[in-house]
Image (cartoon, rainbow, N blue to C red; front, side):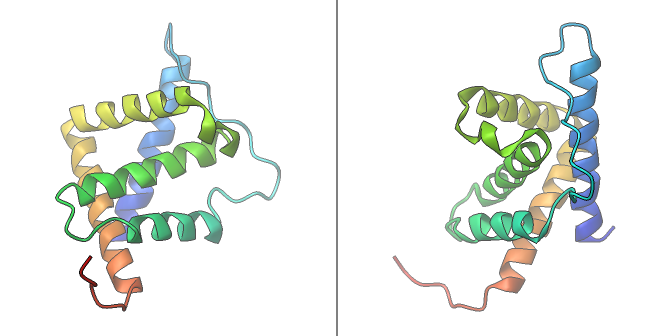
Amino acid sequence: MTALSSVQQIVTVIRAAMVGRAAAPGGTARPPKRRAAGRPDSGPGLGALIAARVAAIDPDDPARGRRAFRIFLEAVLLNELGQQLINDPAFYALADAVERQIAAEPALALLAEAASAALLSDESAMTTRPHQAS
């Protein structure tokens, strides 16, 4: 499986989980909003934002992979539910719940690890600057 297909697969799983939570009795998540005609799922702006935020993670951070996945998860959720939620504390509670659900299911946890590795390998391929000591 290529790194890109791992990332695409985890996006599909996140979307399905969001729809499943909304359909379940007592579900707390809203279904994803319908996009305007012609609006892509993720444009170059979303990918560039994720890449920039991942590049800002300290290379020596032992939680770097988890942080990269969280950046990705938040970006996907905001893309699906609307950028206006970025300042809503409930959005981060939702992101925490989705992250816990992914970590609790072994197959999803493996996909998250693959997505993290893809994000970090993409970031390292894009950056050519040498590591600078702080």
